[in-house]
Amino acid sequence: MYVEQVMFDKDNNKKLKNQVEVNAKELLHKELPFDVLCWELAELQLIIEKGHGNYTDHEVSVMEQNIFNSTISYKEICWIISTLICFLGQHNLYPQIKIKG
Image (tube, rainbow, N blue to C red; front, side, top):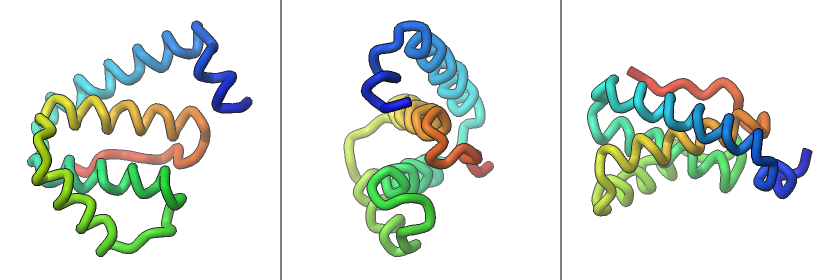
């Protein structure tokens, strides 16, 4: 299935939205340190940009610091991480993502 088809499939979008919501709430309740969430978001972004394993810890660290120093809130980062995890899992780009902690 192409990404374009997935984006316009109402049933699929509803399921994705529900899963994002559930995952985000679970992540919020874990109360992980903000720097851990920044690292996870940085890693997810690099997976999308370069593919799983095609980046270095240094690249993750630099991106993590940029995220940490931004104005993103704890709640926002949880929702973004949840969205990216669901998206990547839905497209089998990296289906075994689990948040540390």
